[in-house]
Each structure stands twice: as structure tokens, then as C-alpha cells.
Length: 102
View (cartoon, rainbow, N blue to C red):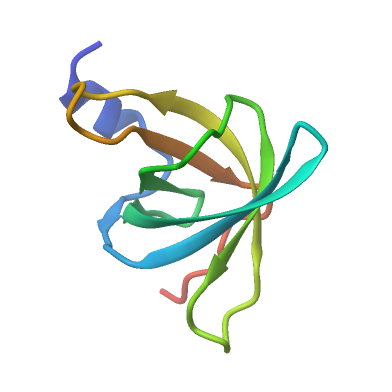
């Protein structure tokens, strides 16, 4: 399936947003906090650059640098390693979709 068909099949429009966030998850019985940057955002999920050691299916919380924002619970849907000299990206689905005013 080409990129234009994938974009058409999405449940919500993605908005390019480069925002620093912290991913908080458990790995090998250790609590991990990993800083990364968002690439795009929709009401159903977010794509992040440099997601650390996330695995597909892993549950996590996304914490914003803005103190007024509550953590968002999510699940890793995909992890993609890009070119060898670039960092990976991951798609995270929100467990509860964001409510965006119309």
C-alpha cells in the first residue's frame, strides 16, 4: 500500500508537531524514562523520533514538558529503524483518544 492510501485510510488528520516529551515505561523489570521528540500528532496517537528501546505492543505513558498537561497512556503500534545513521521512529496509539475541540 502506498503512502497516499495509508494517509487516506487514517482515522484522523495528523498534524506535524515537534515537541519534546518523555516516554515512561517498564523494560526488563526496570522503570525507564526516555526523552524524545514528537513528529506528528492526531487525536488517536503520536509518532515519535528516537523512541529508545520501545517494542511493538509495549504500554507506556507520554509526559509533556508542560506541567499543565496530564500524562497520556498509550501502546506502541510499530517501531521502524530508518537509515543506519538516523534514529528510529515509533507509532504510539493513545488508549483514550484525545478530545480536540471542533
